[in-house]
Length: 171
Image (tube, rainbow, N blue to C red; front, side):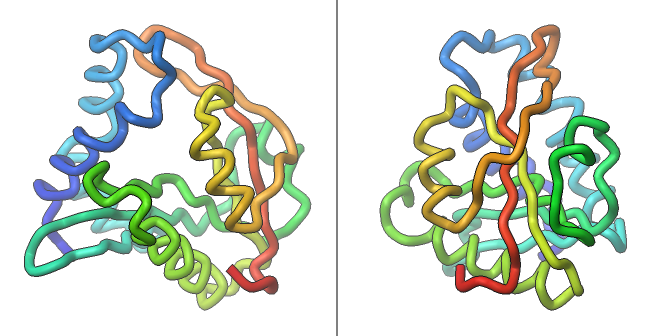
């Protein structure tokens, strides 16, 4: 997949769904512009430490995940992780029209396999502590809460759980 524009369009639809209800449209838009724009996806696609997996059905992009294969930089994350080396599941989103149909589980399995194939012992992610649906999905996928970190969403500091899972267990 090398279509940064399609990834940015999907991110614009899916990222707001992961934000707390109190998030302002301005803060969400600032994050999209500062992290999930077409230009940023071009950079991710060119980065050898980043892997982007997609669900593409007949040319329609339905979901994507973004794996980062380098040590965590956030001190709260590094203090929480127990499985090293560990890949970050930075993004894992499915278009809302495909929620509940198994697409997210398929994307998660592929992401776990890609991280294991790259030699990681574990995988970690940050998820907003108010996103109960995502937390349940990640727990069902074998992740467990190991710490907390902050996440800047526009002008607001949000609070995330740091979740981790071993890659030697079945997804």
